[in-house]
Length: 502
Image (tube, rainbow, N blue to C red; front, side):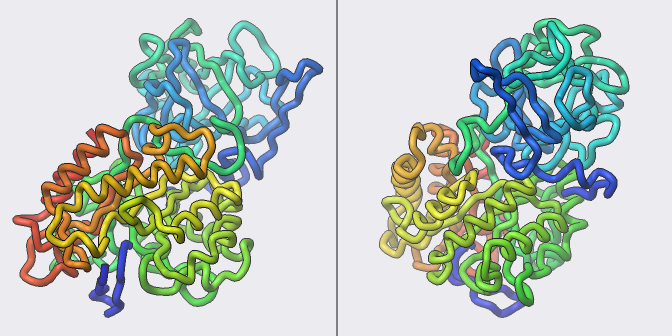
């Protein structure tokens, strides 16, 4: 889609949290999905069973007595729950042993969700648990207690978690299915958790997907719309949240600055980003787009590219990174990009998604090359997001069915690239991003198309729904570059597509 940035007069075609005490820096380096890059030694006896764990950080899942997994809803930023029957991304936590050495009963530990926030017991205990803390202070510290024994804790052992301040145990009421509270004075069934070490599904590259029955919803927020409330129906992320209730956005775009580093469009608005996150928001940052200089072009090797990405993550606190690959010259850099992303994922625990052009049958060859480059490097992919727009052959026809056809085609493609993937897991990895209203090609994604896509996403538990873009979701007197041309008021498409989460 041909797009003009009003602040830069640059044509844009297509789509396309968090300060921490420095003293804790050594403890909070992100663990990878497979625990690469951290000290983790699983010692085995002659029968091949894990006897003890020596680690500063581990990737773990925790299952209640009733069989449901603890889950950081949306990866973090909300309540700690116990409702999931499958261990995937949101059910995976980084456990840090603050005592160091072997993990033994009585050690003080913290748990961090995938978005970088820690599990916290408000007031030190006595109420529900959240995954909202930007640090690991007293409320975020727990004694890990081995049920029915003492000493070293092994993967598969039954454990309980006790607040260090109040002494209450974490409890899953009715053995799971709801929120987790720190209210129990004992360790009985509801307080018993089975801890498993390692990434669900094993190591190597692959897809984590959503897998929680909840579709992520994150419309695109162009960086040039910041601080421009006289033109757009919002002035910043906080204002957008207050006016719409939106809890997720995709910032577009992150490009190269001078040399091998990112530009400042997102970095210069960190205060607004952090304020949005403090309100319960989640932020994705999308690298690339249709125009401008990709970071990959200016960073010639995996180490330098990884360093530039890491600097962005550390500066902004954003750990959910999307890569919108639309330029022909960027498809051949898939191996370079994949190797760099693996390094950052290992060191900072980032989420990685790709936004890629779609054909009616699914991904084009370039998009498949991007995904395969990441998988080959061992990257865990959260979403493969299809640009269900600008097909160029469906003028006068509804685009909703075409978008759904693209997603169904990509489902089969993902299953062929990732062995053992079920239909449900493939859907949980996939996203659909429409260009609302009039597309560059003259095709129209109508409000009725939006309703059809939202229903499909709910019915199939699609991993992600987004649209280009929130600034266009309004009525205006100019053309489709500025608004959808199909709105009767502000946020008409948002009010429909947000129902994909219901």
